[in-house]
Image (tube, rainbow, N blue to C red; front, side):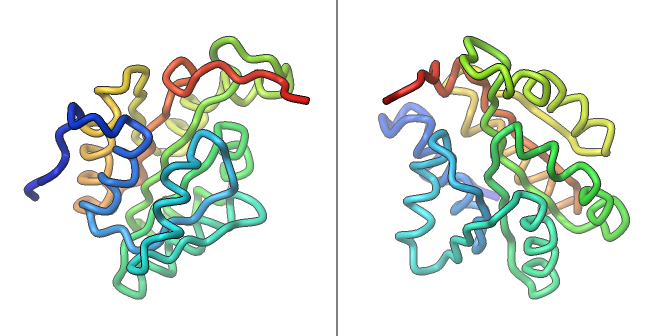
Length: 180
């Protein structure tokens, strides 16, 4: 697949790269729980008339939704935070048994300069938990890594009916702080 317009050095930044890569891979469904780290991709998906942007009440709903989209002949992606990965662990059995493409983009919490101690346990366990469930994972900690790693993950998910996740490291996203 030719990835036109995928030059990470085009000045739009890694946050815009997430949506551009999803769009280039023909993603028509973006399921998400609201998250500041994914805000640019969420806004772009909501504004795009070719994409169904679906807000979830909990992350594991996204797996069933994306399985249904694939059965309907369309591609989708799940945008979630590392804490939401914990909510998906049991539901990942659906992908393991049904073998449909599953593409997840995970914003990390609890892995660098975290102010909220409740984020640390799942943040530290996210990659290992995903791998234990058979999900192929890659981690982006530098802006220039986001587009090529997400392209690779999407290619493997959609061409190989694999479960793939790109983890967007907290250093990439930036330090979060309490705001009053």
